[in-house]
Amino acid sequence: MKKTLICLVSLALLSACGKNEIPANHASVQTEPSSSALESQSEFPTVSSSFSSERSSNMTQRYIATIGEKSYVLDLEDSDTGKAFKALLPLNLEMTELNGNEKYHYLDTAIRQDNPSVPAGIHSGDLMLFGNSCIVLFYRDFQTSYSYVRLGKLENPKELSENVGPSSVNVTFAIQ
Image 1 (spheres, rainbow, N blue to C red):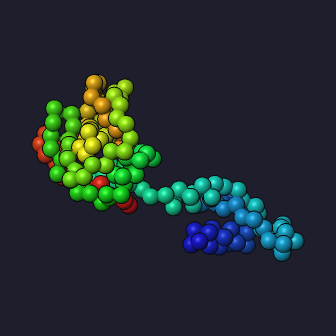
Image 2 (tube, rainbow, N blue to C red):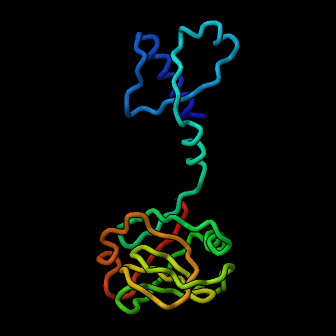
Image 3 (cartoon, one colour):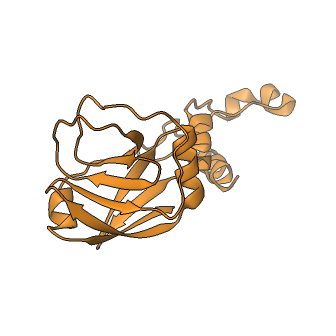
């Protein structure tokens, strides 16, 4: 609502100034004209945009994984196990080092709802569930023969290996 009001005021100001352009860094709105607006349609320029998709994406929850001072956007799976993980958030986990490529933590409760499978490959930033309750965050790419249920993936996991370090690390998973 606030975004709509700001955009409409901006459109009115631009129209009053005699400009028909919207600055590139400014959100635009596609509005449904009222009957009175249809009569005076030449007074207000029609601006098309993806406002409805912007609004719907703002309504979706955003997930964050924080390791030390660094935060990563976390794309969680829309699966039954992913939903069970989301229901636990926020979580602050002490994750233990294993094999020079992953950090893990056993939850107190089982959350697996989906069948595990062997992934084609593990990639830095993959968040998986091993067994019924072991959360695993991978920080190096490698091949595996173990079965997991995918929980999600960190966006842009650059420097993840350096941020998690060689020993146990505190990781917070939260809704932003």
